[in-house]
Amino acid sequence: MANLTGALIGCGFFAVNQMHGWSDVKGATIVAICDRDPQRLKIVGDQFGIERRYSDTAALFADGGFDFVDIATTVQSHRTLVEMAAGHKVPAICQKPFAQTLSDAKAMVAACRNAGVPLMVHENFRWQTPIQAVRKVLDNGAIGTPFWGRLSFRSGYDVFSGQPYLAEGERFIIEDLGIHTLDIARFLLGDVKSLTARTKRVNPAIKGEDVATILLDHESGMTSIVDVSYATKLAVEPFPETLVEIDGSEGTIRLSQGYRLEVTNGNGTEIIDVSPTLLPWASRPWHNIQESVFAIQQHWTDRLMSGGETSTSGADNLKTFALVEAGYESASTGRSIDIGVLLK
Image 1 (cartoon, rainbow, N blue to C red):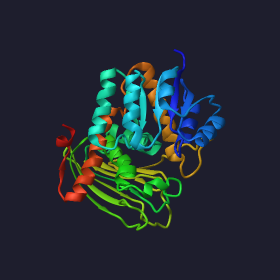
Image 2 (cartoon, rainbow, N blue to C red):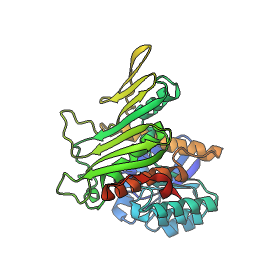
Image 3 (tube, helix red, strand yellow):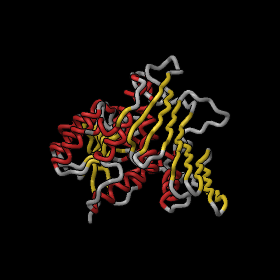
Image 4 (tube, rainbow, N blue to C red):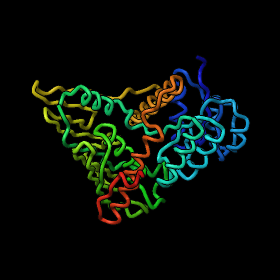
């Protein structure tokens, strides 16, 4: 089968990582880019040798000549662009957060389903090498049946210098970072029945919350905690590592700082280095995320060629997005939120 061709919509902060990733993917090539900012369009186009450049998405879709679109814009435009792709029968990848509201997300999934085209959310954290390694240990049954877990991302890293718009939103850490950690919780420990959350704003220079602690009751009966912070100053900055603790009936898993994975069971303790690969175009400490960008794009390409459903399909991501919405509702009301009710 010939290589798939794609168009990237949005040439902002993170799009360069996606373009590098596409350069490494086997079976797909980006042939067109689109952005309303002519300077960003020129920078990305020149860097990656893309001749087809558009400032208007309607013109991009009208010209066609590509097999899929990669939507790397901010959330405000996601529903419009996904529905535009569906209207042109073009498969779409959509950056997270998937939508502004859960009702928008449901409409986007429905639009692509009705058009018969695949839709995947660019939820790359579950594709990180250390997270995949944890999943492999669970799948092998090395710790028996899990009954408790904790997924933690605590950092003092200045994310606002590269993405200043993050400081302006009424919502911040659950929507921007917690969404990843909640998705990892679903990926490793299964879907969630109910959720209770507490949030706090520590940094007075931002509008949204920068600390969140979330208690998850999983459908399996197990309990987990998702805790995220951009207000935590540590001796060694762990950004952008997600740390994992899981207790099972036969042992434990500990993914600690420095990509150190410890698996303890009746056979003793095995220590595994699960460091991500430093790709030629990547840079520390971002290389963990950058490698996962390539991994999810390769997954999309493979699935688009084979006709299989993606790991983070639009339909699957509704379950993660519902956790984000429930987190904010719980934090504002003080109540535990039933996830099934949100997904109806």
